[in-house]
Length: 297
Image (cartoon, rainbow, N blue to C red; front, side):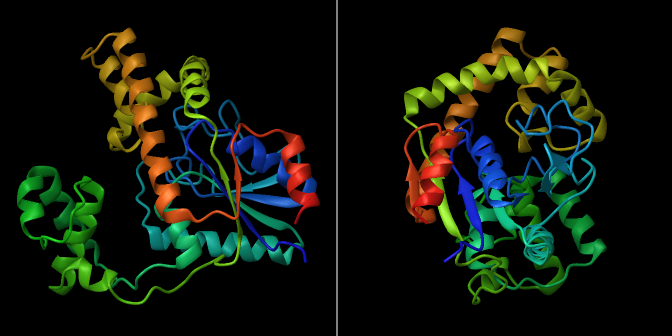
């Protein structure tokens, strides 16, 4: 039976983008992004997007690519927003007779694609602005409005919880405990690319100079100019600090490598405990791995 959709994930620098492209080439596929940073336009090098050094963001070598570089840095996107966009692109691909291939390393996007999300209330612009202002001015006070079971410390997630509280008078955890709805591809074939950690560290270290030569420093200046939260993307934070003279170039690169390795470790933990893959590829994949996958489906 033909597979209707694939989800391809793995730690950063594992080779999942190349694998997705080759799979799309061999299956008449459409590649759909599930990375929360690559969805933004203007940070293609920093995010290691397949569209670094490109000016058009909807195809590569004739293969359709969707949800890459679609948002300006000044715009916010929620998981429910992403799910709505992903569903539309999935349906477009199916309608065109193409295989939807989701690729990326953002766990909460992948979880939403497979399991859906808890229904959340609509939030007014006023409540959203109040929440953002409070988080920016006093994160501790904002956290104080939330229940003990809300453990997130990321400012964006705290702001989301606070805006729900301002709008409804109820905690976001109440909504999160409701049954999930809106899964896009609950039966997708799940592929995990999970190479040896030593190999991955070598690939991460080798990739940083390539990202710099692809314009990452200029992108970081754009991040500063836009007011986008530089801490949302590894690499952006380090480069912005370098631009401001807070760290040296050597410190920037070393910290970038260290933070990327730490992120890859967190990703591996999520894959091990939350993903439940159908297929695990324990090395950086090649076109032969795609052929083997398709022969065994």
